[in-house]
Length: 431
Ligand code: EPZ
Picture (cartoon, protein in one colour):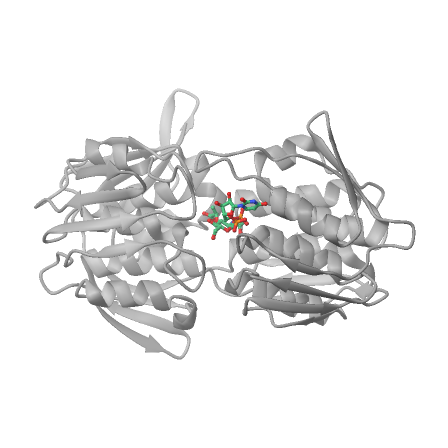
């Protein structure tokens, strides 16, 4: 069992570089399955459990993967399966976005239903509905959904998404690249990761327009080829460092972060009293003068509104704000599990419906806490950085899914933070 141990109170200072975006790499690796010709080269790929999982999923379908440093080459010219291993899909629901590429290229896909996770039931009904609109049939049996394209292949359609689902937009967009005619996705998800995916698809020879707006048009083509693409920076990793630095910094430069992907968060940090400076290839942040944030009212929603993936981190920060804050989670049904862990550290939070009411306290105290999901883990690390005394964070398999070298990066900023892996009887520090 690994754990992170933090001595709180050390001010953060210096420069930290953000890695490539997990939530862009995952669909981009899946999209590589569409390439009948040539080899894809994906750059700025972070070393994360989720990315390994997607690479294994794509490899299990027959693609050849060559991963060196932060570059992954994918040769998908000769695939031999349309059924990714169920345990990989169940381990990471994002694997479900291989459905669109397989269906479009081979007319068939057989995918385990991913099921829910800690933060909510997370259905895939909109994915399936969208693929059916392109002409596919779907049969759910033995925990799998079996999708089949009509004899002549998929055809274009006008699809209105009831919810601007990130994953459903990705699956439909990828499937539509090889469908006959034009597809229009209305109320599409506008996340930067979807724009990055569309840019990669267009580099492969697709004709996708309007990504980043709520209407995406895709004109189908006959075939796609491998392409080279550098993935955008991870805005949620960047946001995590911005929140920590706004709380306990002495001026931190978050390199490779794009402020136009983080407008809603930057606005909230400025409202709380931090100073944010936008630079050519990064963002500089200075903490709130008193070291304590002003209280905030935050509501998560779909991009470009405040991201749900930054909800836990801001809740942790507001536990020591000067007054009462309200944080409302509108995207996922069950994304406040970090609250109970923060209460162990002395936070004064109560939940009313989908709102966390946070009465700021003078200080948190270190404790043994456990991450319940990826972003909850990041929130507990932030709480440990500001708490008095020692905090032990457990449940690191959640953090490892989405943060690349988090401990080393905070250490470089001056945090007193160590990671320990249990090796045999003793726990050994691994930096
Ligand atoms: C993506 O998940 C991200 N994951 C999530 O980040 C992020 O929280 C989420 O988008 C919202 O921004 C990846 O990109 C890999 P959705 P996704 O489909 O695509 C409902 C992280 O921390 N819905 O946009 O699964 C759903 O239940 C992760 O990095 C349906 O009802 O999210 C949810 O309430 C966590 N039917 C809402 O839509 C569907 O078919 C948004 O989900 C699909 C979704």
